[in-house]
Image (cartoon, rainbow, N blue to C red; front, side):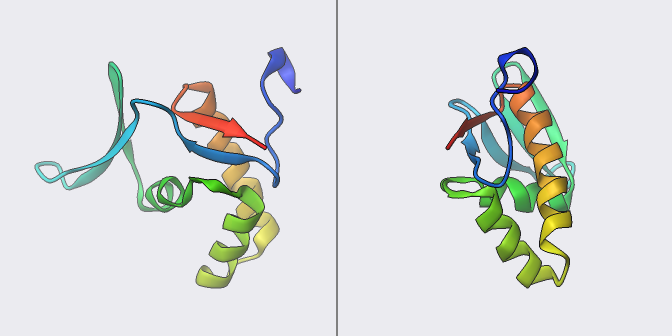
Length: 99
């Protein structure tokens, strides 16, 4: 466990959208948004790719390896960026985490 009892987030973490959270296209604004009860967040292209990859089956390490191959970037750098993203969105209760 990390600070304040929050689950540790690392390459072995498995994440998926929390119950009631949905990824939606906002055609009027030309954005993709993450809708949750009583809140919405506009996502950039990178965030959209990450959210789409969070299937509740693959680990962050597996997803980072796939992105590294797909985008020709270092896997560890991608994983570190994903961990920051996952931590932020999990703290907003938009993601469910498991091992």
